[in-house]
Length: 269
Image (cartoon, rainbow, N blue to C red; front, side, top):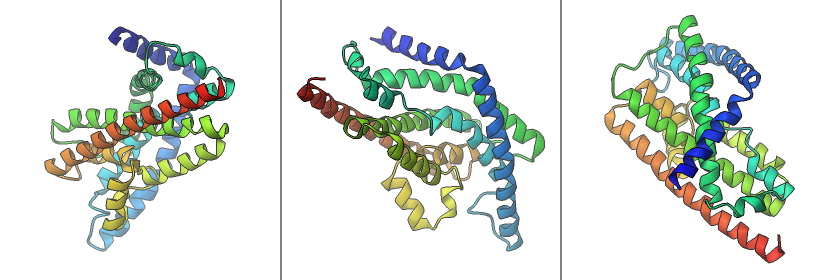
């Protein structure tokens, strides 16, 4: 079984390595939007500094790192653009997945982790180097931050996959993913910390998002770990929240998949 999972992960890596031009285009696009977001964040930081405060606890250099690391993580976490399960449900090919000797949830997860590894090697580094060359960027000062960030990014990828799987799985009942996909795109960008750091919100609203939704576990969590905005205890707490959401959402994926399989059997699919 472990060999099969590794094979599926390698297939996900090779699949996305095939589309090199798309990788270049996505990296350039992320870098361009990184420039726009950085100037907005620096304006926010300057306004806060003028009043003698910091923007939600971030310095200007930390906000620069937040923006450019976030632009790189978009491709790793993959907030949007994954419709593999929805497409296979509409075409009926999902029935073939049920005949394979591996749970569909973990088969798609293994392939997604292979895709994420390819994105780390291609789409993550370029935006960060671009931002570091143009702006004064904060660099983590604690050596342990780097492995914590890698673990947080891995958990963020798992949480993102589970959310995307659940959104795609609605096609078992709706057959049309477009409306759900648009809702997911808005939710993940707004509540994930892509448009602005969740820490900009009032404390009660930020706490509601952290504990009531998986949104901050997508981007906000690894970026907060990397920028070292908080101390050790809070960083470990962030990882704990991400791990809890990953386990809960993967369990929910399996429950939904089981119910969908019973629906297919009842309909004779």
